Structure formats: structure tokens, C-alpha cells
Image 1 (cartoon, rainbow, N blue to C red):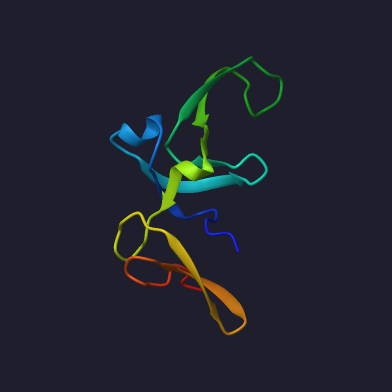
Image 2: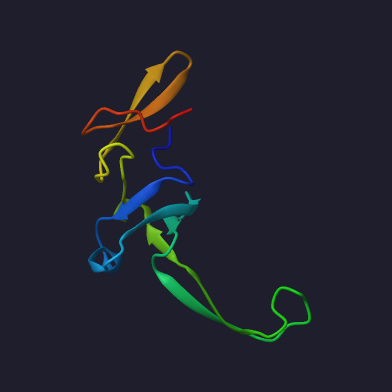
Length: 110
């Protein structure tokens, strides 16, 4: 079972993004093959785009988007205790449920 999912709130624990004022955000995308994660508002990169004929970018310019961070550099933030924590997995009935190792609260509310 994967311990991080799209939509989870994570905090950066190592690297250049750790020392920034805002080092938390929601996961937008996970690339399991490259072990990278795209986090909302972190590691912003600018792409210079030419003027295009399509409707997506008729004017061109600089587009700012979230870059990728190593999967090992982020830690899940518990929604209950609001602290970065390790994630455990328990078998409840037929499904595995994730829980916080610090406060033992369930992370999956479904």
C-alpha cells in the first residue's frame, strides 16, 4: 500500500525547499517510476512559452508551475495533530487504513 496519495498535505523535510517560509502543500501528482512528487506552491519553475495558435497560450510568455521534489524529502502531515509524521498501515476488515504514528489517528476518513 502506498503511504502518500494525491491530495495529502505534506511538509518538506530536506533540501532547498525546507528552509522556505512556506514548506507545506498538497500533493498534485506522484511519479512512482522516478520517485518524485509535485507539491502545490513549492519548487516553482518558470517555462518560457512561444506564442501559439491554439487557445491554451495565444500570447505566450512565462508560465510558472510547480516542479518536482524527491519523494523521500517529504513527510505526511497528520490532519489531527498537524505535525509531520510517519504513516502506519492497519488492516480493518477488508481494507488497509493509514494512521498517524504519533497520535494514532486515522488518516483516511473514508
